[in-house]
Image (cartoon, rainbow, N blue to C red; front, side, top):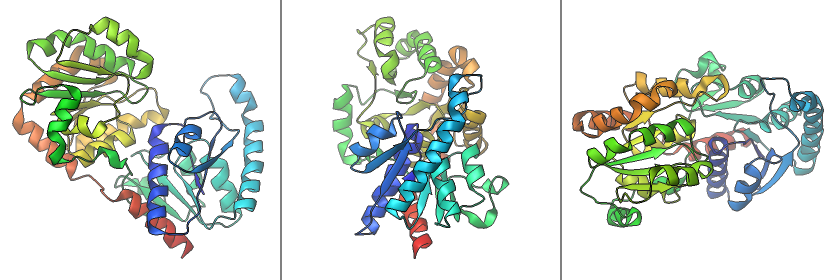
Length: 359
């Protein structure tokens, strides 16, 4: 059983682990457990796996009806988890973070079923810290995680990413044609996550004249929520600016990008390490324990990326991006450093750790 979700940063690694298990084990049966109403309930079936939803949600930082209902939801999820485990009889249970992983892995631990948790960030989440006491193995993406977890349980595996981001040098011409851009111009890729990021979008808008003045090409994923607004405010007549709600051919986007602007979620950083792209990270301040800032600092301390604080982005971000685009030596240095942090076989390595639990 594989549990967790809530965001793409949890869901896509979980799917990658499941796919790796299917490739290694011919007769494996996999059941996902998510949270009702969350995006995993759609994304997991699209990937070809069965999923069951628990009635569970997180605790809000302010007084709300959800907080009042939390004890009831938790009890319901624990009972449902016990029933699911009794019916499915798993040999191992994997948690990737998110609300649903808590009840399921807690019950599995109580029933002495081997559990594995995967921590994507350089700062351990509350659920995973709580579950680590009973987990047999803890797969992490960064060195130094023994400050959160028992050292003897840790396996440094990296974060699994979608295979579709892998670059293919033989498809470069196709990538340029896909975005209708010029292969002879510098290209900036801006990513705010699948939902978009208000601060990053406002920062790009503030710097559009500088983009034009420096004859830079821009591939800009604004997010579905902001798409119509950004089209209207940015205008649609600039052939050097490609505005997308969501980039489906991400391999093409990474292939032709000289520099990437991105949030600092675990999945985004894993993709940057695999593609080896020079990046400027703008950590979201709206996440638990400010973990994106901690993720970003890990790369900055390894001289593998630049960082601009969210509060400084509107005034600084595009200037820094333009400066980096023209600094070939710095781009090469960042690319080499970030590439050295990649874990190319993360999904397979985690799958093998799962198999060790049931061998």
